[in-house]
Image (cartoon, rainbow, N blue to C red; front, side, top):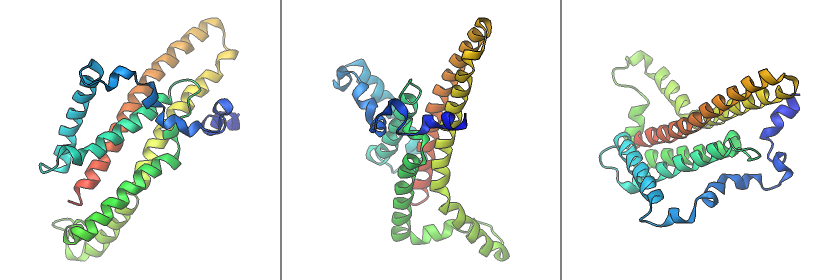
Length: 224
């Protein structure tokens, strides 16, 4: 039972295709061709969302940030959102439920922030290791705690996204496996429950994409 349950997260199991990681870019091919035309409603909707995200990320990064500065975080949000939402479709591999993908997103971002900060703003980075007002006797401990906190950031980013995607999918699969053993009256109740859970999972997909992008933005704001 457990092997069958977790097999939904096996890249080689979904539809028995070897290219299931291709699902991470599937969203680009599902967009209608008119989306790319500048004067249509799809483009206007995307522009409105992008501008709103730019204003929010600009507030986190700082007033000196430009559209190009926040573009990487807007793109990150959209990429994760596509993957999370596509993973809710039947027989579509959920790439964002794997640490292989989430770590591949979190590690380069964190590493680039650290390199940029330590090479260009060394004093600023050292000051972050000791919060303002820390007693002298506690400074060595605070440096150790802050260092550990910085080192585990990419892991927490990656695990948070993957764990939330796994939890929702497992719950949906567990409920779906109970269908054949239920009566018709209970089956209708189960169907309604799954529709509700699917709606909640859609909300989780959006929220987790936003949380990942916001945390990445906050980490970048500490090195400028």
